[in-house]
Image (cartoon, rainbow over all chains, first blue to last red; front, side, top):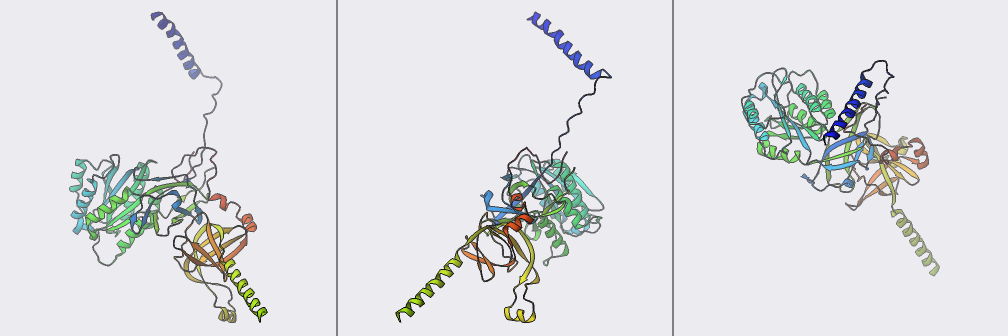
Length: 308
Length: 153
């Protein structure tokens, strides 16, 4: 055994020496340039929800729907799966401006309730960001289901202006950085929908959210009986990103249960990019047989064009 | 008398046959859909008198479909904004009185569409060479990994 070991050692040392010398010696012939692989990504991924008579459809089949992508009808899909097993990357946006002062404690209570729900999948990430004043502030990132984060949330106070659109844009960029292919990004927005100080517009914010593939679940803290401007803003942002709008006056329990049910329902479909025309591509999902089926998804995506 | 009766029977039979033939559905595939201005049907005699025999826009948006049949491609427009038809692989339709009627199996009725344009299939294929192919997945020659519509290097 010793002999064998003795014989092996010089060979391995020699090999290591040869490798090192070939790498270190100057003036040797140039190494072949490292290979560069170019691949054009050409797939669209859509998260969508199907309902029939306002109830989620649990057994949707691949041939029950078609995607209308910029006018072209897509029936052949690369993949079609349920999204219930997909990990969620949830970002809760808490309006802590003066405008929501009367209902701020209730808002925090609802956020805490949502954070402590047991129906999260273990791997789901929950982050909380508050906005009141000039800039949004991250209260906890990814680990908001810990007791320490809950204490931080409970201690939050309301003051200042409402940078709503800046915050939504910030949240979209945050999610774009933090989510990967295996996660589904979601923004839960608690607000009255009134912006008072943002530098960005509603369309800037929505464009950023669409680019991040996130959906906005808007919880309207406004208590007005008639729809306000803020209500319409929240409804528009939710609809355009394929999310949902809830009014807190309907009752926190109903709102939260509806939202949690929705977060783990839904489907993910992927298909070949049908047109390489740069710009915004409008998307809609329609039934192939049953006209009672209704589909909800983001209104489109932005394609920057192929890089040569 | 008998000859007259026989002739009337033949005429009735022929007309029934024509009606029956008119009910025969053709088949095609809807390859495009968009919201476009609705068409206001011309009101026959009045339209002819006023010189506006062509169809007019109403300002409202209605669904417009491109229906590709064997020999002819139809561009059709719904009568209302909610004239949605199932986008199945095969669509059964028939023509009646300058309109195109699409059969909706689940609801057992037909939806009427105005015809905006009719083009010979060969001509349409020449102008839009890849539309039918674009909407179907070709066999994959290489593995492409992607998450969204973006380009990587």
